[in-house]
Length: 250
Image: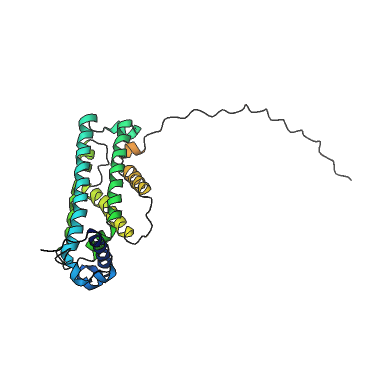
């Protein structure tokens, strides 16, 4: 009867494997180095995984499932928003209406969830982008990217049709720009030891998206006039006293 795998040893093995994959890539990582890093024998490795690729595949599967869940949840939230509040109109953007701010808040919160997931799996994302060449995982990350670009593109197509997003930029370009930003941020995360302020990252990104994609008329819409400043009455200026010219001495 096979001996059951120790769950604590498995967690240590996965952590060691993820660190080794980052350092040497999936193909360059060796099982003996992984097990040595967590104090296990090479034979103990096979109690937990059939191969290093299978072990990495399990971690990637967790990341992909979590990412897909976030995307599906976001799509449902957008559908619910439009069903309950209706589509945005031009005046919503120009006036920063409550409906507009609610949509921005929802989108920012969703993107924060994406950033949190990317931080938790930043090493896996790094390996998918830079350390999986020549393996079955080589194109997986870019498949996720293509799907997200398609989703953002469709979102901006709807906004353009409702005349609440600038129409002089193809939605595919906007989608690629936004998703590309997140890919680069994920790469930066893989080089960080201390967790950044992801909430501020999400707010900053949406601030740029909101201002950059705003229709020209909305961007230049006059703000509500502020109350005139109170000025004190001017005192009458005193006239200059003319002095008699002095005559030159003869």
